[in-house]
Length: 381
Image (tube, rainbow, N blue to C red):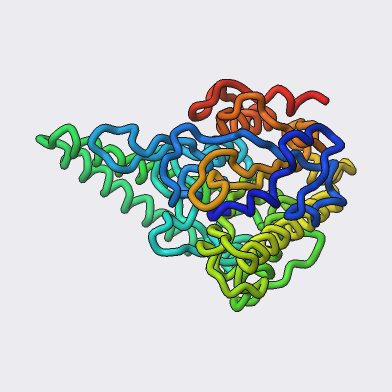
C-alpha cells in the first residue's frame, strides 16, 4: 500500500508485545484470524531517503544513489528472487499486479528485474483473468509459428548489438549490455511459453467468473485476491505482487480525499477516512486468509499451510520511512504466528524479513539487500 497507514491506529502499543496484545483499531477486522498473522515494529530500509517513493524500494531495499553520477538506481526485488526458483515449475513465473498509478509516484509494478528495471504490471482483474482462464482460440501450429518469429527477431537484435558495441564508451557499452540482458529475459520467457504450449490450463474447483471491467477499489481488490487463490489452486503461479489501488480505493469507501491527501491525515474527517481505508484493507486481507484456509490440497492441507502473505509499505505515514507497517500471514515459510513482535534494534533491516521469507520458503540464498540475518523469533514460539 504505497501511501502508508494511519500509524496511531494501525500499530499496536509498542509495550504490548507477544501473543496477548490488543489489536489496534485499524486491524480489528482481522480479529478472527489473529492466530494466523504477526505484526512487526522497528523494521525499515536504511537506504530509504525519498518520502515520495513508498512503493519503489519496498521489495528491494536498494540505495537509489548507489551508483555515482546517477540519480536513480534499483536492484532485484525479493519476489523475483523467489520466482527464479519457484517459477521454474509453473506456467507463469510470477504475476506482478498494478492496481492503479498516480503521475509522479513511480512505475505501476512494485517488482524489479535482475538489472533493477521495473517489470510492467497487469492493471486490472480482467487482465489477470484472461491470462489464467480465457480459452486460446489460436490453433497450436499458428502459436508455434508466432513464437518462432519472435525468437528470430530476438536473434537479429542480439546480433546487431554485438556489432554495435565496437568503439563504444564504457558507459554506452554498459547500456547496451543492460539491453541485451533484457532481451535475454524475453528469450527465457518465450522458451517457457513454448514449453507450456502443449499443456492445457487447469480449471479451479470453484467456478471463476470473468470480472466486470468497471470494477474499482474494494470490489477490484476482492476479485484480484480471488483470482490469486484460483491461480494458486491450479498451480499456475506461486509468486505474486500487488500494488494496491489508491484513489479509486478511497472513493469506493466513500471518501472524498485522494490517497495522497489521506496519507496527510490532519483533522478529524481525514483521520476517520484514513482509518476506514485501513479497516477496508484489513477486512479484504481477512477474507483472503479465509479463502486460503478453506481451499484444500489433495493431501488435505490448506493453501494457507503453503503460503506466505506480506502486507505493508516502506512508507509508514506522510513522508516517514521508519517503523514500516508490516504484517505477515500464512504458514508457508514455517513462521510461528499470532504475535506482535517489536525488534530490539529500532532500525532492524526490513530485508531481514525478506531473507526470512526466502529461506523459510526453501529459496537458496544467504543474503538479500542489506540483510544482517534472518529474524530468528519468527521460527520459534
